Length: 219
Image 1 (spheres, rainbow, N blue to C red):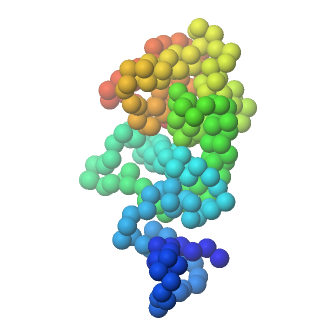
Image 2 (cartoon, rainbow, N blue to C red):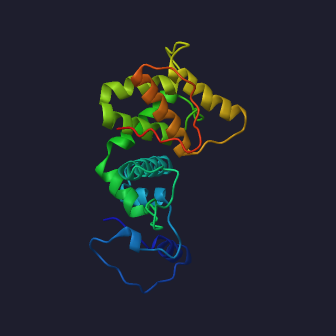
Image 3 (cartoon, one colour):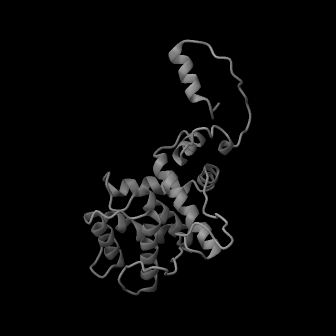
């Protein structure tokens, strides 16, 4: 079986060598309602839900980014926003949301692993969680072949001509890194989605995210 709660107490029993009277329950439980005395991260939740997986921190970040994208797209709102009219916190994402999305979309974990493999470095110009999320969203919208053909050159830089929008995209990320400026995951997805939009239209323009511009959802 899987132990969902009480790990620290059991370790204390082993280390102390002293018995402990406790209650043990079997069955199906909602994880988000358990053990909330100390907050568990998204990666903790995914590790407990899918212990055979790996790199849970990156997976949790990718899942969170995909959920933000989809919730904002459904409402035609900016994923940078946290609330909508009336004060509803529609961007609040809990561990139950993350687990449900990861289980419904196992392909995301596969593409995350593939993005790390293609990068062949521990310090890619785009975090694997962001590029994995973008890859998943583009594949969902346009299919496996189109997504792979678009995303892999972003990761590797291979075969890009000077007029390719993906080369501009890579330069944006490299310049941010060289300038010591961090880029938020939503903003990084914004640039990638914009590059996808530009390439699909056959246009060429400067990749700059302007304030209050409409987010280019991947659909």
